[in-house]
Amino acid sequence: MDDKQRSLLLESSSRFPPPPGAKLSYGTAGFRADALILQSTVFRVGILAALRSLKTQSVIGLMITASHNKVSDNGIKIADPCGGMLSQDWEPFADELANAPDPQTLLSLIIEFAKKEKISFDGAFSAEILLGRDTRPSGESLLEAAKQGINSIVGAVVHDMGILTTPQLHWMVRARNKGLKATEADYFGQLLSSFRCIMDLIPNERKINEIEDRLIVDGANGVGGEKLEAVKKMLSGLVIEVLNSGKEGGILNEGVGADFVQKEKVVPHGFGSNHEGIRCASLDGDADRLVYFSVPSNSSSKIDLVDGDKILSLFAVFIKEQLSILEGDMKGNNNYKARLGVVQTAYANGASTDYLKHLGLEVVFTPTGVKYLHTRAAQYDIGIYFEANGHGTILFSEHYLSWLEAKNNELSSISQGSELQTAALRLLAVSKLINQAVGDALSGLLLVEAILQHMGWSIHRWSELYQDLPSRQLKVKVVDRTAVVTANAETVVVRPPSLQEAINAEIAKYTRGRSFIRPSGTEDVIRVYAEASTQEEVDNLANSVAELVDQFLGGGSFP
Ligand code: 16G
Ligand code: MG
Image (cartoon, rainbow, N blue to C red):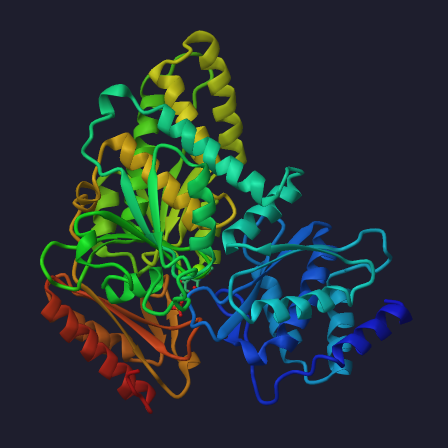
């Protein structure tokens, strides 16, 4: 690193002193905190993104968002060249950078890390970063801090892509690194044309009018609502009404959004008895999560929730149907059986796992967090992953897509328009509609809608695929949440000793009882999950496990 680069880093970082006393961690999904203390972190992540770009010689993304957190929070995360999450082996360096106390320490850390990673500052490659932000008011000034961080690396180029959903930015990074067009218009164009393709391939006899042609979407008063309004204008074959689009003056994530709806199981603000029985969906604050629900006809405020597990199940049924057509009667020489896999976390409702296994699918589990699920799903020809909270997508391997393209070409010459070719075309359209970089509420919503029409299913028919086991989530504040260490995809506590035995003893008291605890990656709490055959039982199980957490880890309170 030459003197010019050194003094540029020292000079710019002196303008962004870290917040006194705050200890920041890259966490499950980037840095998140009160927006007021994030200037220096965002500036430093700007530097990190430029370094990552130099290292990978690729375009890198930087997204400013705090997803479903309250509006006064904000956050920042990096999208790697493939459009996925920052490689986990860079996370410790991200933490060190964010917490460096002064410019000189920061510079030393960068020099040392660049040496270790063999990052060259010789100017042969210029770092290139795509920047996006959600609708949070703090986004604009944090964007400026990010730009200054990026510009602290000589020659770095920044493209401000404006206000975007998180998945749009990830999609753009992936597209750019594949040499494809990557504007918002290209994103919308791809979604709309592949949606149309699946709709046009619906067999005539399936076009039964069991389903309501109207969908009502809760936009969480965030960026997703705004983008969906744009999609709506270009869409045919589906009537979408957006509530909580952010234009009516509602507050981001307050009593609205997928996180609220999924955790509380109540209607979001703006929904009520006039929406009874209608298909409704809810996006989270940065539109990377999607859940569906319907408002029951009795006066209860509880909803019939159709969560990420059921979206996964719907996708699995559809994909499996296409694979059975394609692989059931292989014509021609070029035959291949796809490896289809499903990835869930311990939060998946036990009834969903039973259902998927009953379909004959391979189901595997990873710890919570997209980076784990995504990596695992990428090991299949077609990997479907979803968290119960509504984050998920379907990944197609490059190898399988090339095979599918070739098969489609072959079939179009020997049996154009056949069931076989139609199945191949549907799978190709799904691979374009569903975001290959990360879970995406907008593209997921369009795929759900196309599949429901394909099946001729109402939301009620879909919801009846299986009956969720009653479940309960609690959180417990403890002195030090890092004292809890888990294994086996977070289903077993290995530290503190004996806690797992005590939890097992509680579980054993209930029919179909299941419970696990884990330290949250986004909040300073221990999370408790429980499942049992009745709501009363599950509430008791969750409470007893929460009490055990308190006993073992001390200083507890139940926020
Ligand atoms: C983040 C994760 C999500 C996970 C959640 C768990 C990403 C993009 N998002 O929102 O996958 O379910 O954290 O939160 O990875 P928790 O650790 O606080 O329970
Ligand atoms: Mg989100």
